[in-house]
Length: 488
Image (tube, rainbow, N blue to C red):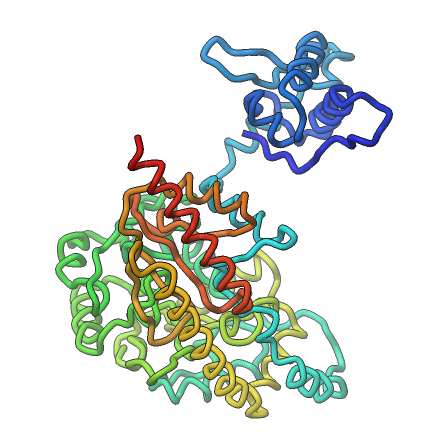
């Protein structure tokens, strides 16, 4: 199904149906509407274009008469030709075949819509997992940039592993986590997401099994699946992954890996207990199952600091550790790091150089100044204080508006509240109805291996008055859908 972000001009002298015909022809000609693509129903088009259905019928009839679209017996209308193929006897180029035949799989429809709608004007983003613009430390950033100005003598490419001075700073910084590695065992990447891409390209063959929490952030991505790998969900309890789940799904054959977010898990907010960490590390070590520890939320503790990372107890190089400043400081820097055995880091660095020839030079220089100056630690203290206020305020709003229709966790850090609805209403319908009210939610199905009644609520992005307005509206929509369901 195609996406349409256009509406006819009702003040134009050109007839509405003619504007619609011209728009669709121009999109077909540009290759945006590929041959073989289904277009929305007449009713849906009337909603999108905000016109009468008769106008849509007239426009579609015109397009059919030109041989551009065709109605199917099974219902729906499909694009069957393009403007240049009507003027040429040469076979038309079918971009749809190229798109569908590519290696990388498309995101789920809901995830694509979330990614697009996040930038819609005046929409309240209740699930966005990044710091809001008001949390950006502008004055500190000005200080850092001013200090960097006189130090920047070149912005050329850096060595494969990244800026050596930054890796030295990170090596020293991670000692407080109990992780002691030399700069040579650190690779600078363009965020933790690129780290996962490099791991998927570099270390595992097609058909490998990736063990992940259920639910998991990784389920919202198709990084591993696009390369023919299989994700297997592991059940969790209040202490994190249940060890027996790894035993049941790990097996003894090679080509498997465990991906985990043990600290302020995305999306549930769970913190893996110290005892569970020890057991999982030992079990995976015994079976030689490598672990990818995604620790990007570690610094976002509120009440107390979390248990030490799995990597801090890793004596055999079994853990690849992912860090980033995207959640704590600025996702736009696109800087993260991988820590692991030097041979693995060398391999990942080689593949990274083949893909982008290194992460941003200036971002690496600025981050080095942030950390080495002590301003990063100073920022984190204030950031945690603000996160605590936001979390507490959001919990208050939920208590006032959701206590009889949902249950939720109280996270001890990170960004997320894992909200579970009491009723069995359609989450897809809730998603659509919320959009109409300019509210964007993240359904739990984006992160899980099965449908569920959960929503990921993030208190990190929306302003608190927006959060209150959005959650109140959301509670009204839920109650309305419950009432409709009960009346059926």
